[in-house]
Length: 152
Image 1: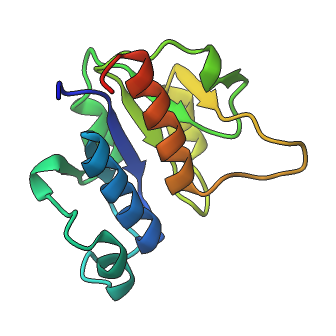
Image 2: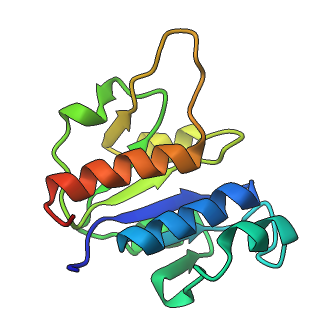
């Protein structure tokens, strides 16, 4: 399988969600980037229970900060998934070199980070609903990106 889009998590704070995302990325052949600090330790029992044997550290890149992450993306497109966006992911053309960024489960990304990213997308939802689980959101967007780039 050719290398496709990358998923990035901004300071994830729920171990089970991060573990589920690692499994999704492993099964679909996507690289994962984690922007620290995490709100948990990788030795957390809740994390280990969900990640099982899908933890392949050569497919995961850790960045010490958003600045480190951003500096590694020179001339690469970062797509921010946010409930605050106006554009639906269904109206967007993904590229296999994209890095798709998801915010913290508890707070998304800070305004400062959001202001630095040109491409911002949302998953349309029913009115009066706040958000999907981040692991579910990653699966939806990664599947669409892989479909559009003909990597699955």
